[in-house]
Image 1 (tube, chains in turn purple, yellow):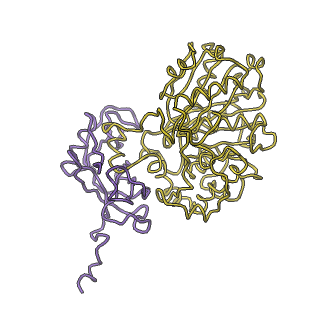
Image 2 (cartoon, helix red, strand yellow; image 1 turned 60 degrees about the horizontal axis):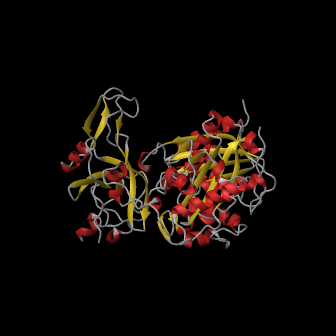
Length: 148
Length: 382
């Protein structure tokens, strides 16, 4: 089976991928207008300032939209169906991701549900993925049932 | 000031066939469409001094294959709407005197993939870094992502989304060239195979082989040609995002709206003036976004507008009368076919002719809500 695609960083995106490798979601913020943004680039998309800086985002996000894909991309055959999602970070920017720790069903994936970042090793890089923010994990029985 | 641009579509034709054409390469489809369009205009290839097409196979290849030495070249390649942008750029070039007679070609072996460039993102490109690792695999996995957000925010139902395909099939039934002509119901759509929830197979466009071309010239010059000219009254273009995740608002297309505003303003028209409409329908939600972006339906109401029958045969706003990408044909870059149907309707030559339309509007999408082009075409100059 073909392996899943592995991103190849470029100089302007390297700090993002370095952050992921360290277990941190690092994105950029404009030091002039204050707006956080993603994807990585050396100029603020809101005010054109080049005075931009990296910071570590909270990793908290909400589910903005998604599809549940039934025609697997090469490397995803065993994972199908799977959710390709766009999440909205607490800081505002949005990014594409996969949803982990929840079944890929419309019932489990509710728009605006709170999510938390985690990192999945893929080749030479770590990839940000998002799972439910609550302590309990989907697929596990609730605590009171487990106690029995 | 309203009026015509002074430039017309003087010739328009598709390839002899569309559908599954394993005997035609991508380049051959360009050539066949070009020859048909030039003949339609009553011209010969020697009359052509400007060439426009997308970068693959590109204007140099197409011009050379046809024996054209151009004075003006446009290789704008921004997805399926590129041909609408070529018309806009040709209008400017003709008005500037850079070209007199421009040929715009499309050909794509989208299904058979004969002589076709592979689809591939470099792993270091933006989509390669920030989308492909999550298992995107072509438009069905990308273009579709905004829809659930729209459904939640505006109450669009699965049945209303499915009805877009039902309405367009009713037009396709009248078009002998359409790939799918048998009537379908909402139940049929919802029972078809799930491709990428919430999209079923029948809510996704076809993948076909085919092509087409246009000849664009000044109205004055085209008066000497054979066919009734279709006047370019207004045009617009815009772009939004190279990645769907960076779309400003998942419930509307900024590029559709801006391109539409520019084209309507140049033509000096409002939605009430439009007799016929084509909206690039790669997936069932795109006509909904298009109707709202152009102002034919209020935000959140286009799904009901279609489900109420307004856009199907007998409705007040004939939309995608060739059957669209969902039922007619979709080579990958469908914009050329949307223009062709607008021209046919204004000439009174369409398979599903909608009376005597005076103004047709074409909205083209490029990429996945990445770019947009809009043409306002008229039977007469305004």
